[in-house]
Image (cartoon, rainbow, N blue to C red; front, top):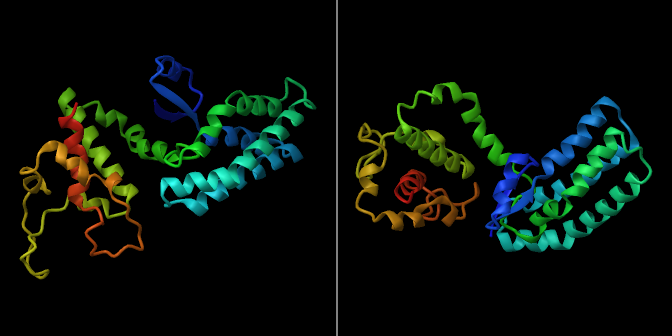
Amino acid sequence: MDPFQADAYAGFQKLYERGTIVEVACWAPARRKFHEIHIAHTSPITTEAIERIAALYAIEAEIRGSTADVRKAVRQARAAPLLDNIRNWLENTLAKLSRKSDTAAAIRYALSRWHELNRYADDGQLEIDNNAAERALRIVALGRKNFLFAGSDAGGRTSGGHLLAAGLGKAQRPRPRALSAPCTRSDRRPSHQPDQRPVAMERLAPHPVRSLLNKCPHKVMWTPNSDPHSEERPTPDAYLAVSVVTHSLR
């Protein structure tokens, strides 16, 4: 089954009922509930809850950029015991609180989704939250009125493909503007004017569509410390390939 990470929005339940998608809960809303109470009425319980969750995020900060196997191993060794302790503490704390209190509601929110909140610890490819995806969609929310005028369904799909390519490009930290910059012929010196042709399209044209999957960023492991001239570094072609593949395999 394919994992789907999201908050507790009721509209997603239909997806899980099909049996082909497994829910992966997001720790950000669980933490946010304690944080909002903490801002309004600071208490030892909310302080401890935030500190315990922060310890999970500290582990994620250490292993960010590592392989999936390494992430899973570290989570199993270090995060799993913390998760067990958090659950025991939440259950014991809930028994001491009024059922009508906001803090009790925050605890029930976490406990009612505990299995889903723990799934990230069993899969190194998953994240502790989906904040990165939400940040990537922020541009869609900010520009939604403009996107009403895509012209047609095909225009909307094309715009979506470009947003996908740009989002994946940003995730690997090259300059996003490279996606729209004109191609520069390799046989020209840097002092010469670049060739003003459309971005990379003619270089992608000779390749079979499915072979372009191998050019996609998720096939390449690159970090800011990598050799900038290495063949392993994704190129603008790679991010444009994502867009082309997305439309061709619909």
